[in-house]
Length: 467
Image 1 (cartoon, rainbow, N blue to C red):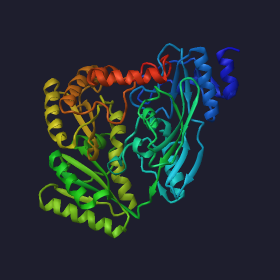
Image 2 (cartoon, rainbow, N blue to C red):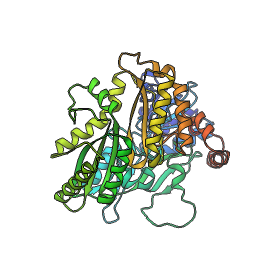
Image 3 (cartoon, rainbow, N blue to C red):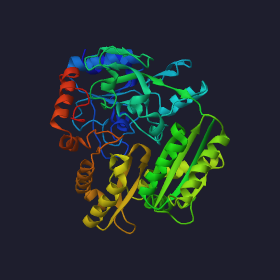
Image 4 (cartoon, rainbow, N blue to C red):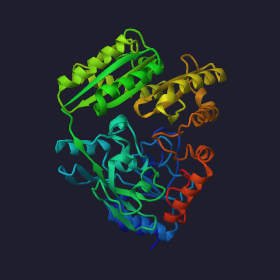
């Protein structure tokens, strides 16, 4: 029996795709920057089938490309052009296996979308707090493989902090079942952490046991107009002191972000009469009452207004207002794409260094090319900026891509000088592999290669990613 026959036997003929028209949706990344080919696309229904597929590939010496919802931004789940690999999609692995309300855990399979996990938790009166723009299509397996962040990291942490246990198919086909809903388990190496953020290079995540939280009694959202990023840092400090862990989100948007959204979507409501230099979007999740949330927000924003830290503020008065505020923030990537795209930099820095970094790096980029338009936004509360570079209105929108390597090099050098990271939540994939080799120390790279050799000695799992 040849490999394709073995794979058909493992998943069923219907779920082994080989025709070009069937495999095409899996072979191009979300941004259409990476396009590859595959020997076949396998869609297992459960961990047993996934294990059988991996074992068949191991026996044949064929590479494996794990893929979740295919919403990544760095080409981590896209095969190369050789058509030598089997792509394993987890889209059929969608069971919610268990919810333990008393233990505040949910166990789900890797193909569940983030939104489906949130909804399953909500039905039991619990919150799964990981939240990001692609939550309707991004899968839990992909979220864990990239250690996804999103908008509530400030309170609840990245995907890494939300995972208590994993079930993983190793590169030889064996299954490691580490689905333990334990907060304390001091029995040696914490193996799950090897696979979280590994982008499918060490194994295939098939299921996860995740932390849940009580539903807040109230959520209140507000926008604040700011004269500078330094003022945003001061406002963040004030809100942390006043609201404590109730502060679940603190986003910032440069004035250019609101202008880009306005150009792309003229119907979107402008929050302030004049576009401020910076706008903060903040959210409180209160476990006391709605009145308490409103009082906390109004007190903190009133004091910030008196201190000159903010120029204006708007507190959402309804769920519709709140959704409109968030829609403004989440429209930025879509607006940039509609206007011609941009060169993306997903970076993290110590919060204290962000204002100086943005001011100096913006100036260096302007000196490099006068057509560059920085469109900077992100999660200030956890130090993560989407430091994107587009072209100013009236300029050719393709210009940033013609100078992409030059822009990345300048930004990456500035990030490294500020003790930051060149990837905060998007991962490394194919896009940043060479940059990682430049900015990681030799000791770190040697340790990572040793782990890769130990778990995947033949280098068959997602080859060419990260390392």
